[in-house]
Amino acid sequence: MGIEGQSVAQQPRVAHLRNGVVTSGVPLIFAHVFYLLGQHHVTSTNEDAAKLSDHTPPAIFCVAKILRLWDDLGSAKDEAQEGLDGSYRDLYLENPSCTPADAEEHMRRLIKREWEELNRECFSRRTFSTSFARACFNAARMVGVMYSYDKEQRLPVLEDYMRMLLL
Image 1 (cartoon, one colour):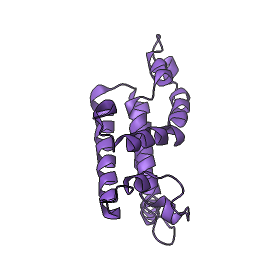
Image 2: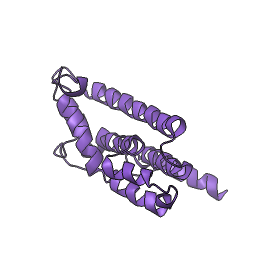
Image 3: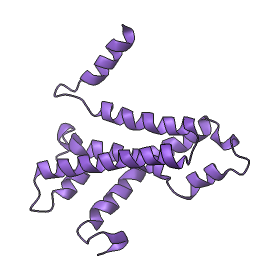
Image 4: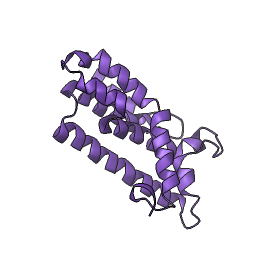
């Protein structure tokens, strides 16, 4: 076993996801959301602000991982990147015994686990205010809609939502 209880084979994937969280831009966006929601005025000790500056809190980390995994599920193929984007899926497929279906199933399990952690973080631990937790949930929900496009690059789910809103 290597770092943090991960096998040597898993370590590159773990490092890739950590890097993907940072490069997704989600932590930067949520640092801005935190201040735009006025959260820095909520506590006199600014404990929440310190949580944001010291490390990426789990609520934000989960949203970023969900975004990265959804993006890596198929964007290289859809965006004609020819597998040169360094996606998690491609890294997972470097194991000769894995099939594309195995990689997709594994990534969907990871997404499910991140949703479970996001729920725990926002409902049980209550690290941040309700408005900030709601922003985290809405961003994570948006990711699923954003990556549900069809072969014509349309978003049928979003079109359905818009139709329901306009009726």
